[in-house]
Length: 95
Length: 149
Image 1 (cartoon, chains in turn green, purple):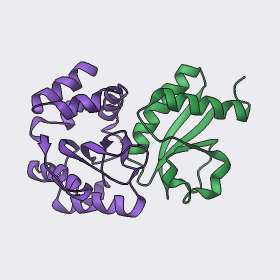
Image 2 (cartoon, chains in turn cyan, orange):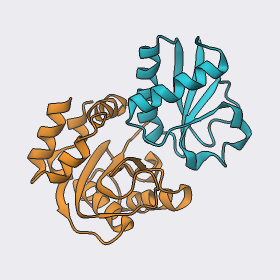
Image 3 (cartoon, helix red, strand yellow):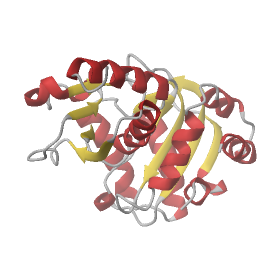
């Protein structure tokens, strides 16, 4: 079980759209995971494997830089799926 | 709560003339204020979010979704949508210029998820933003939503 946070500044608009599409990508890949949304401040203290976010957040989330995955278009399911698949391979989660 | 519960006909305007992104957010926000969905300060908050965090609200090519926290004066969960007569730049290198602006007001973190999920389904189709931009009235906008839902 992989734990993913989708993070945007406020944690209620963009990150929610991202969460929906990350969940769809996981289903498609057959990876079991839990996806939650967080704002840039509420991520502190959380335990997770991966953060999916937007490039604008890279400075604020610098301390998690090994766990960051960036997407530029929250609605592009194929792009999100491709990015995640690449990351999962790197992490050795899928073959 | 469905997308059409948030995106009500009186919250839609087409071919709106604005000169910059702030005015675009204000126009989308004005519809929410006139509906009674948010207090006027909510509109200022949406602009402040972009000033503070950058143009990340441009979620897809041509499409921006400004929003602010519930505490900023949200009264009922709603989504307004305007199409712009002339596109504006938000400063987002990937997804500018913007010609559809949908302002989201949510009273909490949970109740609008189904509606947003539906919006994500609709916008997963690349042509939707263009189709919205060409719509002649609110009815056409909603028909496009219905078609892709």
